[in-house]
Image (cartoon, rainbow, N blue to C red; front, side, top):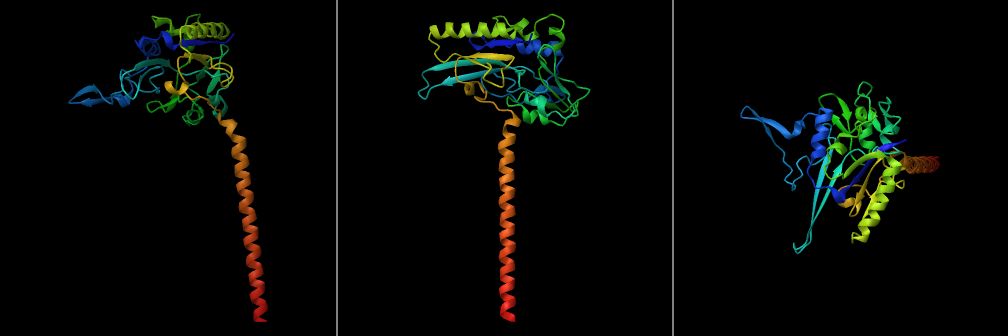
Length: 273
């Protein structure tokens, strides 16, 4: 039975308890780029200045990121908040698995995708293959990192650290099929309350389904998510056809050029005779 998480953004209050719990349980250091010695003391730098969003992105040491989105109209009279606790989606069709040359990325019996640190060679192919930008290179270790869905916890019968810490149950851990049914009911409830754009992001229509999926109150792009994420291999055939076509055209052009050169040489030789 596949395990995953349902993230209901309509219940998120932006408290960041999930970020803290993720850091604590996984013993993740502070992001090196966000700290520097100033006058002999370690100081926080590189503040985003973007509302209450302090981390700004997912990194090798930030496996969970609470996004803060402020929607303000041109007249600056109407303001809407959108908040979302983001992480690895543990895709059913995972591009990172397909491209890893050492098979460091594997899928467990609970359907979560993890990175075997002792097998990873730091080639970063998985970073380019992930359409959600959740995998990052760790300069300290020379390998890549991302959310593991608290692999050690869930294989011992516990829920994920972020779900455990969430005070509003915006993040819920469980069987994916049960969570999907719960999400669909929640969408209908919200639409009945006037949230006409409420939708489930990550159902089976996206990469075979996301084991960590979301209930959004707006379009995916508003939350920094791709509307139609694609796997690298889906671009392989069109790219190959284009490459083959280009090669054929170049070959044909070369043949024509050599032929014209030969005809010109024969014509000149005829004149000399």
